[in-house]
Length: 363
Image (cartoon, rainbow, N blue to C red; front, top):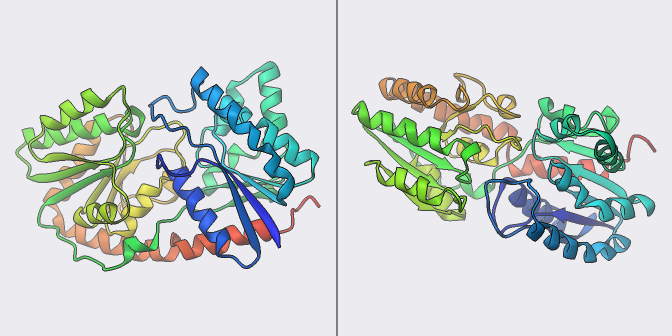
């Protein structure tokens, strides 16, 4: 029986990548074909400048390298690295040992910045970045438009597309849609680049225009922005911050809402799991034309794609939905079917096992 080593972040803290890794671990655990081991690379301090270098991070990941001996005991090494120079190079020992020992080496990229980072680098750093990523035998991206992140390093036939997923508990005990009032949810890390300030500005606009709504904001707040964000929320009459939510509390939030807003321009963005969770729980999606979002959200079918860093663009769509509440019902019901055909954990499980099993095209 082949052994798979997963190297990457696991909850907590929770993020799209850490949640995905936890689910991949559970899928492989339940498989009859593989045994699984893990190395958790989660850095516990949440901050907006993800991907940046700090001596605290350097020390943390230096200690992590003592786990490299696990490479010897596994046949397949599956890594979900960061997308910056440091995000890749902190895995140097794991990549090199896996390559030297002829292990199957899989990179799963959860974003759209890796290719950009490569283009921005120069000289020795660029060459070393290329050297490391080209050692992988397979690559996985979240959607078709994100393949270009790996094409400089791997043969196209060794790059696989694997949509993200939402977990089954979200579609259990289905709730009736209430479209009598705008019920707006935000579920993501509260970071500048996730668009939280643009959303809060838009909600203030709604109040100034006397438009009736309710909004609930959930997620981990960047410590540097916490006071500013909480002050803005406290100045909104119809908006509450409910903290970090998991499992039943997350489902309760998304079942409650009928519009999900994620106006992200986050440079590391890929295919946000929170959008898929909102589709599963029958929400209209308002997001941006950014990263792989256009691959999963179609304008006027699943919701609306607004301009990045533009609160007026968000406000206009919310006003439109307020004036056309029947469309909330129509889109929400469509999203339930759309999710079931494309983003269930059963579909994800089948595809990830297929990719891991498939013989590498270069051999």
